[in-house]
Amino acid sequence: MYLAKEVKADIFKKYAGDENNTGSAEGQIALFTHRIDHLTGHLKKNRKDFNTERSLVRLVGKRRSLLDYLKKKDIERYRAIIKELGLRK
Image 1: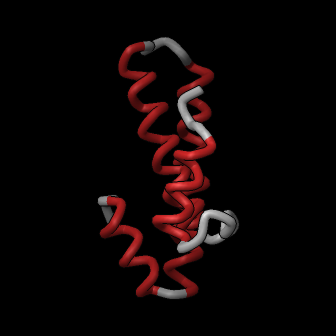
Image 2: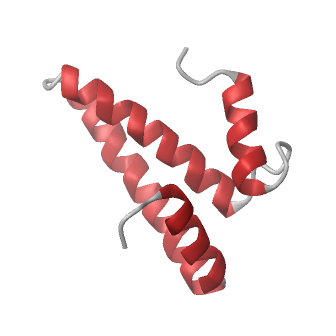
């Protein structure tokens, strides 16, 4: 399994402030980014895995929706998470 409990807890602790705060937008965006990076690496090795490709596109859409929400709600938090994760835009 690529995402152990400890890794997930570390992601939420670093970006959401607390490992139990799993519903925060920053924590979800960071988790989605971690999963997107993992799926991207998988697709580089397995080019014809169309189910994973579809999952990746859906995950990018979910992350984009959360980023749009955060941008509309609090622009400073949006800018901070974009800078911290190194995302474009």
